[in-house]
Length: 440
Image (cartoon, rainbow, N blue to C red; front, side, top):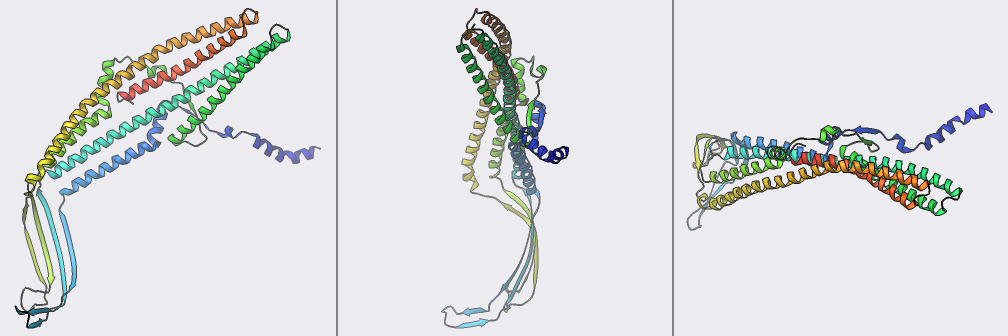
């Protein structure tokens, strides 16, 4: 008998293995908000795109600087030359003059811009300003992604708290149902009370299932965005209350937004870019001075009669001044357009300051409101718990109806959920204020 049992152990172990839920293999990851931000900066695809734009802007600066280097060209060619046919003015008589048939040419040319009206320096300046904009866009995108993910993170934080609330209320509902069944057995309450209690329990269980599904959805979204393994179960850490408290005034927040917010810095750079465009357009009216040198080696020599099959080598060194006369009338419209661009950028910068003020004011008021709500929510939980306790005692003493106890239970549940929602809302409003002022 013992031998048979030993033989069956592998089968028993296999059965037990498949009875283990797959969820038990999920890796739990305790994640703080600071760790969330670190993973966001490292793994977000949107941030990687912005980083690629920064790298591209660096290369464009190098490309603009390369215009300062000399231009060097070389060419090699081979050709076949036919004999020359000679006609008289009336095309009556024709003669054939022999020519060397192999034509070869080797050339080397170099030129260096000495003066171009500041075009090169202005192009370098433009790409440098564009690079600064790319860096600021990276900061802006990173802050946007962080705020988006901290919102998801706090949704998960809130749902996990709600899950605890529903589980506690389900346990309480089960205990209450047990007590009601005992009273019903003694003939003190009707079967209708049992039915109503079971209905409330069913609703709580359905709410718990909905919360679990929402947790799974948001957890999956965070894992994908943060580059975590598919079955990672994120466990948000409790937020230190000191981290979301600030004694800064509204004026302090505004001052920080003006000095730190990437959007405001981008507006200032856009104005500089518009001025740079005007300078570049004006430079088109100025001449370009080049230093050049070239050397050519070719055969045959065809400027003599008869042509000679010999190599001829010549070189030249000098300066070339080029001036586009048509720029006197072509550039006029470009200058007007560039000036409009400056006016547009100036207006956009003023509008940006107005929008910053509005956004900071809205975020500041909502942050203060969220703080005020928390005091009310905590008090509501105390009152709802006290009310439920009183109604429960009255019910089991036949001094209250079941509907009164269910109402008190629902009030208690709603107060507890409001408290958890309010906590998450308060944290999110703090980080939204930080984003609005350029501190995220």
